[in-house]
Amino acid sequence: MENNRTLGRSGIQVSALGFGCWAIGGEWQDPDGQPLGWGTVDDEESVRAVRRALDLGVTFFDTADVYGAGHSERILGRALGKRRDEVVVATKWGNLFDERTRTLYGQDASVEHARAALTASLARLGTDRVDLYQLHLSDADPAQAAELRDLCEEFVSEGLVRAYAWSTDDPARAAVFAEGRHCAAVQHAANVLQDAPEMLALCEELNLASVNRSPLAMGLLGGKRRARQPLEAGDIRSRPPAWLKGFADGSGADPEWLDRVEALQDVLTSGGRTLAQGALAWLWARSPRTVPIPGFRSVDQAEENAGAIAKGPLTAEQAAEADRILGR
Image 1 (tube, rainbow, N blue to C red):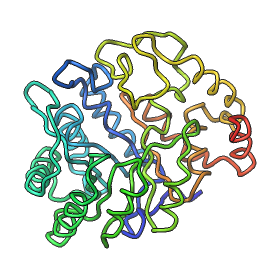
Image 2: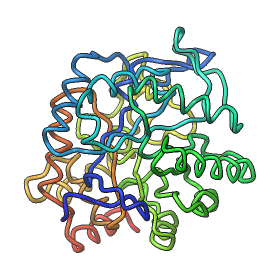
Image 3: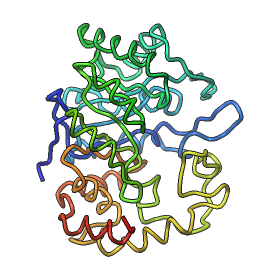
Image 4: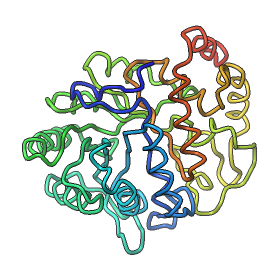
């Protein structure tokens, strides 16, 4: 496998593996106290982990203004420092939050908010441009989204943004953004347990990169979860919202999902891979357009995830075997 992939029609080169920066935002919540982060983090360890990933060839980092209510962007900006020009930075907008109380309190799909959000993200990241700017409202109204797409074209012409995308699991919505010349990708959920054939077909048809969130199924494919193993209170998986599959409220990982992971163990750990590395390898085998963005909170996790690059994709036979095991 080439160690780099291209972000769709933008021509922007990224490492085949990106790093997702949700977890390093630390704890944040909604107005009802529902946790929206992954629990407590050590900011110094996060900075070390980002820098280690850079040293190991990772050049694509995906965050959002709302992760940790601004904290993830600040930490990523600090970690990159003078190496900013070595990497491709993606962030997202559309949510309203209070940085002081670390609380998400609403959404805003207006043109006015988008410009204010971009200005704020640039300041937190300590940079003069965002390489991939992504709408974070997965089910926004398509007509409103078309206005935001046109605004993103303005951002490109102003030099504030290089390319843009929509973070959505709806191919029809992704296609609305793809009508813009500088739309380069769609960010969507995909992993070996949750394939996304329609979205991958759309990416192929419209020359978009497929940026894969939840490539390790929120940790189920990380190899560390056990059935009924409790999670810390500040972890979103301890009280999973409806969209978060594979975890039961208050009781940790769903045993049925873990059974599927267990059944995939042999094929995913082929070639000396860890389970997580095998899950990333499946995504690379799935399409030449995929760029998985696993999360991380430590140097150890950064090293394990980045170690998948050298091992490359699964073979076509191994990928077909995974499908057969899952009854696809």
